Image (tube, rainbow, N blue to C red; front, side, top):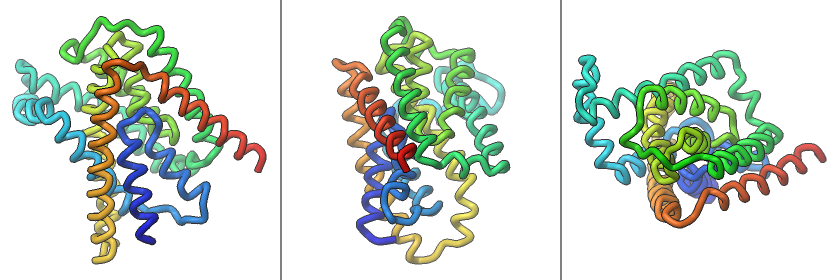
Length: 268
């Protein structure tokens, strides 16, 4: 892969992974709107590892609590905040794993990677985010997260496997529908990304390792580092912005991009 394209993919992934604008949709568009070849699974795994480290570092206090609580959770005990958080994150991840396996085994995962699909999901789920953000109350915080809400947010997260939906965007939308504050909806969406990214990495990792070589390893390391830096910046920017601004700027971007993509798709 050319160096400039490697950097572009890493930056796009890092900047869009945690913003409600769909990182997977943007990555697909790089190849759809240019003559560039798809970056491949090895780079996909690498940039996701980079973004994983970014969210772990940013929310380290919550992550460390969940890690400490995991042994108790595995013993069936959720009597500490950390164990409960670990359990709820596990519950919220299961629907995405199940749906992801269905898409992969049926071949639908490749069939959905089109500009038309991305255009419609950008547009429709952007409008849904706007509606949820305007109508949702702000009565709940992350400490109110419960089993029922984790299941609901997990089911919505599974929908994000359709390109252009945005995993963070749909989880934030679900959080706002359930009455969580903007900042806490975003926080829960980010924490939910950790086991989801790990699960997707495991699913793709075996295939990547089997075909890896020195060149792939070098490109992957560069991509992971660049994605990490970009993701940490984007995550900090969004969380600070939410103190004074709604999700409307992201909605405007999604709707505008969706309309442009649909115009291109239907005029081709």
